[in-house]
Image 1 (cartoon, rainbow, N blue to C red):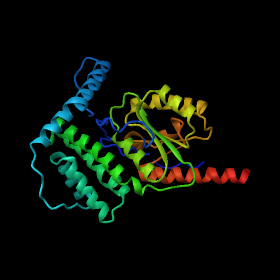
Image 2: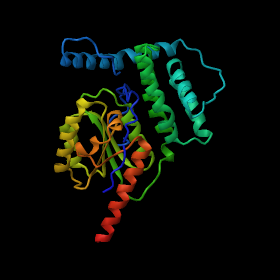
Image 3: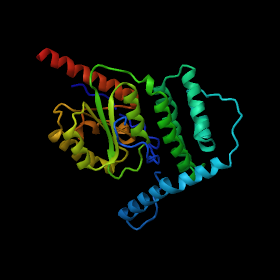
Image 4: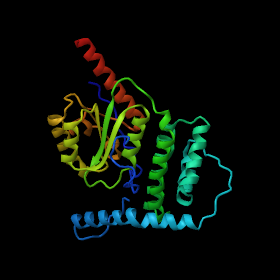
Amino acid sequence: MPTTTTLAHTDPWTLDSEDQNTQMNTAWRAGDTKPSSSDSPSDQSTITALLAKMVEGDIIPRLMLAHRAHQEPSTDKIEHPTLDQAGVEELARRILIQEVDELEAVMLAYLQSGVRLDEIYVDLMAPAARLLGSMWENDTASFSDVTIGLGRMHTLLARLSDACRQDYAERTDVASGLFVTPVGELHSFGIRMVDELFAHAGWRTLCEPNAPIQDVLDIVRNEAFHVLGIGISSAAQVPFVTELIGKVRKVSSNPNIQIMVGGSYIIKRPDLTASVGADCSAIDGREAIAIAETLLYEHNKYNVRCQ
């Protein structure tokens, strides 16, 4: 079985923000805050989780609705920046000051000019989201501005997915992927982007961010997936992922399930791929698809030879 260099969870911080749009649920296609000076890690984790839920579930929607109510329609000519560092910086600037409707118009202008959806996701939106995280860490943007900006990116991701749904590839095989992040992971933008890239490539996908081990085991026991993708963003998640992979291999209804890992932590430490029990890793969503397609092809070819 081939192993490869590093499913980057193209994580924006990598870096990511929990989806504040409840419409992006777990049906088939159906912020990270700075460490505080709390007395214990458990206290800090509890406070962080409660703050994230409060900000994403109540504060962000109120701020965005209030801002939209007082905003005059933009008459600026719609232009899109280039797919380079300058373009990434320009998009990050727009995300902080513009509403989703304006951002969507910019992205649609990209698509109309011939830019592929995967290029928008991997080469523009993901690095722009990472840049937002860096701006907050460097105190060049406020926590509330960055959090609202990441909320806009979640909504934008969902809209682009809907707008391009008719362009999703149709395939005769039944390629399927399950994409998860460990329980306690408050950030889902990156793993959702990987999920969307696979869906655009014609895969049947399910995305379960912040998933307890038992939830994942119940899913793979009841549904045969070709690929399980896991995003890892910190060393603290390694024991969880190792335990999860070991148990998935025991209960999966597909005994040949291929397990990919990615995220900022794995990208920097590709040697951990084998030590956590995964089959392979990838540096971004595009490479993840290429590896997964190769694994699927080799598996199908092997089955044909054995018949």
